[in-house]
Image 1 (tube, rainbow, N blue to C red):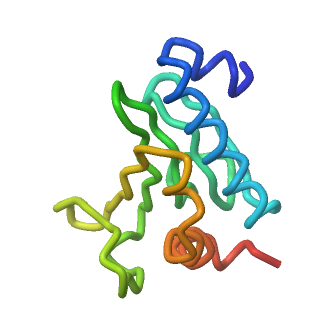
Image 2: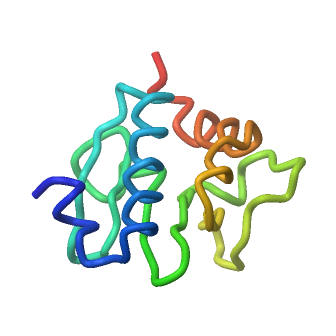
Length: 118
């Protein structure tokens, strides 16, 4: 399954955001293993093929997408972009393309995948 097929059920503007988010993560961390996971309705990025090795994800919703971080509670977030209340998981809501240009978001992506950036 391709990204385009995976996000095809969403409105065009949300689909475009999701595809752009996936491209952004791949640009910053080209060594990350990408897994399209229809069962969890996410595209994940991490160190290996199993879900426990996944560190970052993209999920699409009706009016926004999330870029999520499995180790979100451990990430420095001086701009306070991260949302969520779980033990470890945090996410950033992306509502428009300009949100993907935020350098603070780029820092979160790099930090979450720092172990695989070489």
